Length: 368
Image (cartoon, rainbow, N blue to C red; front, side, top):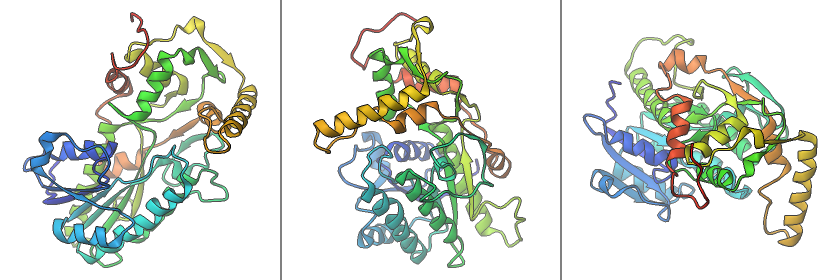
C-alpha cells in the first residue's frame, strides 16, 4: 500500500477492531498522526502505543465531544468503528450510537474538512437474519424493519445508508461503507465464549445436520480492507478525472469475508481444538433443527420467568436459527475495485484466534 494518511482518527479505537487498526497504523512508514476517540471506560490500548497516539475521551452521541475532538485532531481520514456489542440486546443504545451517533460524526466531519470517511458496517445489513442467504453480494438492497427482525442489523443498515448518502454532500468528503461478515480474531470476547463452550463439551451436541455454510472474516483482513478503502478515497479525492461507476469506491458499500465459507459447526469446533479442546467427531449428537427451536423457546421462557424478565437466555430460538442457517457472500466487488485479497486464510486464522486462549480457559485440555 502507498498510503499517505497524514492524520487519522479512529472512532471506537479502544474496541476490538479499533485497537487492531491502530496497531497496524503504527507499523506504517511514515507513521501518520493517529488519534483515538472513544468512551473512557473501555479497555485501553497497549502501553507502547500511548506515546504515539493521541487519546480523546468522549461520547459519539454528544456533538460537543465530537466537534472538540475533531478540532484538535484535525484528521483527513476517519475510521468509524464504534458500535455497541451486537449481542447486548440494548435496543435503545443501538439507535442512539449506530444511527444518531453516526449522524453527528458525519455532520462534524464535514464541518471540519475531513476528506475520507470509512464506516464499519456489517454484512448483516443485506440479510434478514431469518432465511438462508446463498452468495449474497453488494447488488442486494439494505434490509430494514419490518423485514429485518434484528434491531442491531436494522440500525447498522440505517447508518450504512446515512454514510453513503453523505458522500460528497459538501463537495469534499468522500465516504465508503465496509460490510464484514463475522469478524473474529485473537483475544476477542466472542471467540473466548466459543472456546469456553468447547471446554465445557457443548459441541458434542449439534443443532441441525452441520452442512450449513457460513462466512467469517479474520480481523487482520478486515483491517487491510479499511486501509485499502482509505487509500482509494484519498486517491479519488485528488483526481480531476471522471471515475467510471464500475471502478468507483466513494459512495459505495463493500461486503468483506475471508472468501472461504465453511460449515458453521466446523468453525466452532476448530476454535475449540486450537485452544486445546477438540471434540471427538464420534461423540457428536445431532439434534433436529425443529426440536432445537422447541428447546430454545423453553429456555427463553425459563430464564425470563426465573429472572423476572431481567435476563435473556444464551440458548434461544435466535441462536438456534443462527447456528443452522446458511449465510454466504460473494466479494467480487471489493476484490475488483479495492484489490482486496485475504492475507490470512481460515485455517490459520482459526488457529490464531483459538490459540490465543490456549491455557487461559478453565477445564481439562486434551492432547491433539
